[in-house]
Length: 87
Image 1 (cartoon, one colour):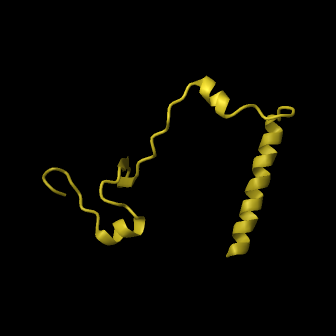
Image 2 (cartoon, rainbow, N blue to C red):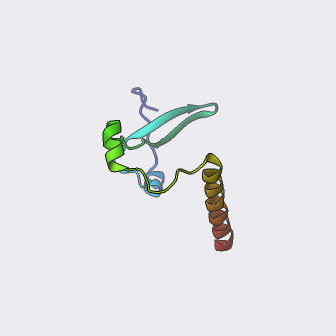
Image 3 (cartoon, rainbow, N blue to C red):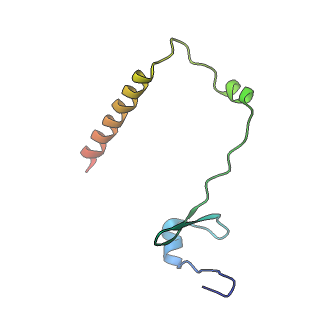
């Protein structure tokens, strides 16, 4: 680490992670050190009215929480089975 607190990330690591010069990195303190990862992209802030304009309500009756949970589990099982068969 330099006197200014700068750290050099080896070229092979930067290439493998596809980190370009000037990339925004997030520094996260952990119990065993620090974690560097790309910063999350900045999200556009919009009003609730703009959100509703972009995402109008879907037709049909509202789903119950149980129906939503079942749909999530069904998709999770489908993805898990697809993953298992790829190996």
